[in-house]
Length: 381
Image 1: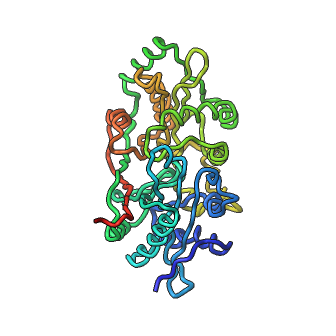
Image 2: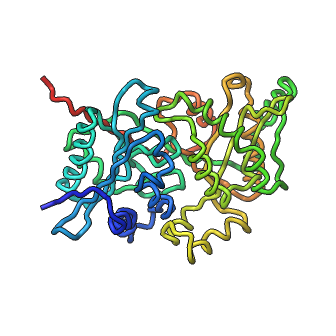
Image 3: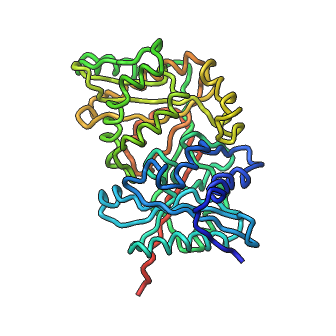
């Protein structure tokens, strides 16, 4: 018999964060999130998103003491207000290959939703668009990225048996950089730079701390504007900004960041690549201390062998000017110089024509797909 309990004690919080480490212990593609960051989400007083969300977390037990699954439930009041639809998100779903375990866990999420007067459950979705989201349905043979998701193939059929259906998909690509920047981007970037009096603010010799301290606030403003129409996005709170930046200080390289500004110095576009940290997360089990930090040190002192596209965005005023060509040119020149031949894209909504048209111009391979599922709890007449 499967028993589900809400996570309330310190031992349950440890069990919640540790469970996927055990479930994927022998899986070479899985990488955890940062351990302490995940643990902090499990209490309202330490959850950096608690000022605009309400969360519950659950563990599934077999034979009273053996943990066989976990799941979280989130009411994102900011997004519900934005969309006009009351919904509960399920998040951080992990479980053994047993539909009864999935049924028990999702039953807990659904009961929580109904207790709050909400009859729509969807996910997997996180607290914002940069949190883990989506259920991997294609590409199980590839490594997980920092911004990606990994789960076993049995997740989808078990959820479908419970009445969950496709809401939308994200797609991910391997982009082949080549050995030189496409001449079209070189020419266009020069035209755009002159015509609109744009300039690049970041140089390769800058220090990461200086870049973050000087430009982070303005970059977040661009993020909020450029991504505001995408599903699940909400403006960053100060707590969320601080938490994200604390992690990025370890892995951001200024040579993989572009900030394009107008003639007055206002940032109007940005792009960010991240050195691939999958191997470090995998080896450290997401724990920086006491010894996990040693797996991340090469990121600070060596050229990365792999990189992933984290973000790229341009404010509305410059969206159709070609400003993105300046961003891509700078980033491509640096990864080519570092000997990186492939980039892993972030996940893009399959109906996001703007970004898909942009990335579609590069040699590539569509190799992963993840899905958001949805279920109405209102009985059909």
